[in-house]
Image (cartoon, rainbow, N blue to C red):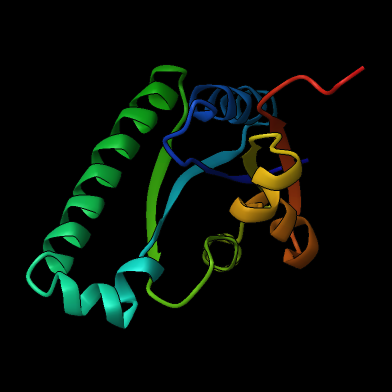
Length: 154
């Protein structure tokens, strides 16, 4: 079945549920696991932001990396406690969408499956925020498991 599962986490309310799903699946299939977090630096790369905060952009990027590393270390410890061997991946870009970074990371790591959360946004919020999960469904070439953030309407 699956031999290499990459789970993408984003420090949202979904993190625990997404990680638990990936851990359970990896244990059931004997798969290797990589836990990935994408740092979106597109806002920091905009000229207006860089001009307004010239000394802060580098510091902000460093804080994002440090925070991601700490967050991923905690997630990896949870998976290791469950008996899994885990790799950690932090990907970042000033020019690419999060979905593109995750697609590239999964391809580079040769993942059989990418596990991500979907926040279940609807209406105007979805229009303005966009959906990483939706882009992964449209653009990705790997199997994808979406873990819902809220129960579907009945």
